[in-house]
Length: 302
Image (tube, rainbow, N blue to C red):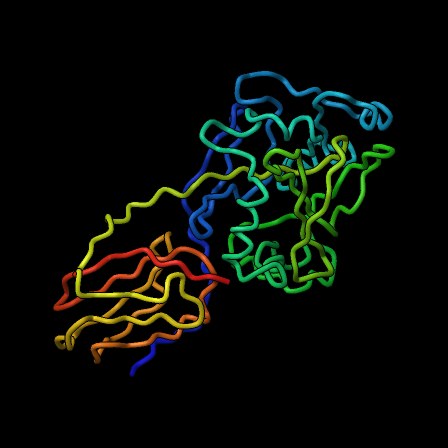
């Protein structure tokens, strides 16, 4: 039997940009099946035009019982870009905070991205901007191979309204379906990504996302060809049903269309090593004489 193997390399897939109601433009990046803003949100208004109160006073911040926004250290000139604004949880709870068609990620949305990037132990490094322009040393494991470009914009305290952790941590609100908010963060001292509970008056960054658009062709089927197990894990077996013709090959791509494995099928049954691929949804295509004879989604489990 033959097995195909390639080293897994994450290359950012730049998708385009999105503009908020204030006219701020954000580059976007495709990560797996999702499209993310590659910068923190900076809008001063909800997408229906409602202004978000700008609170500078510390006591007024932690005592607020409605939506509020600010700049780190109340310094708009130094933080408009690339740090973006900090918002409290009352803002993050609103479905209109992101541009139309975009939304605050749920915990499941965020964790799907983390899984795609190889799991929480290494995903933090793949989310962080590299070097020490924004991050303090050691900026452990930072590669920004995802293109997410996480910047250490810090937090605003829910206890006393003070600003903390700029240069050391970046934190973003996520929505917990049916149970309020949480946050996800990356740190200057860790390659891993972290999570924590939210106090509504906390000041955190926001990243919006949406499901990535794809020009993929529809699935096609061949009754003789079987791919198993379902879901797959370390190995995927391809049973063609008959001995293959010369130049029968299989290609596996992610849902953004990037080719991750491409190898010849020389036997009726071939087992492929897929242990290097993160868990997620992929497209398998069997090609014979330069024509596609099967396109089928496959699921790789953790």
